[in-house]
Image (cartoon, rainbow, N blue to C red; front, side, top):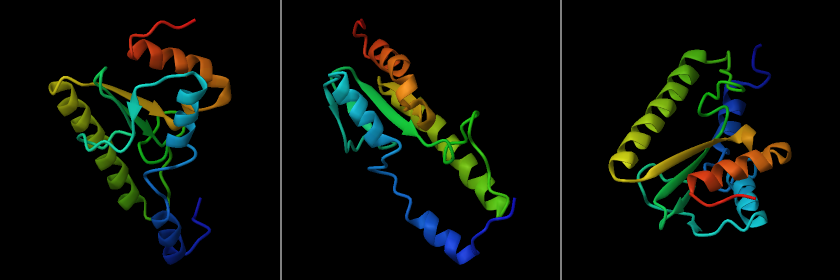
Length: 140
């Protein structure tokens, strides 16, 4: 499907997408942490890859990956307009994610990646259980 916007308009729209404070990703996970009294996390870490959340005592780096930007196998899609650019951009994102994961693990960190689509109300219990398991905390 062709883009309904001009290249200039699409570029302007995409430039406004923020990597921090996105309601569909980081802020949704923040709400989940608060709703389930999951504590010990920090934001704004300067750790390699700039994780969205870091649990220092547990040495856990948590990344929330947008389905578009990180090529989610379930929801990822590539625009048909300027397809070569987007394929390369998304490929570089995925490569960077793998390298960051490897490097953090070498430094003794556990890494958890959460897809944007996992942050739904219907998936909250499953995701909470997965997070607590990664933190090695019991779940009722």
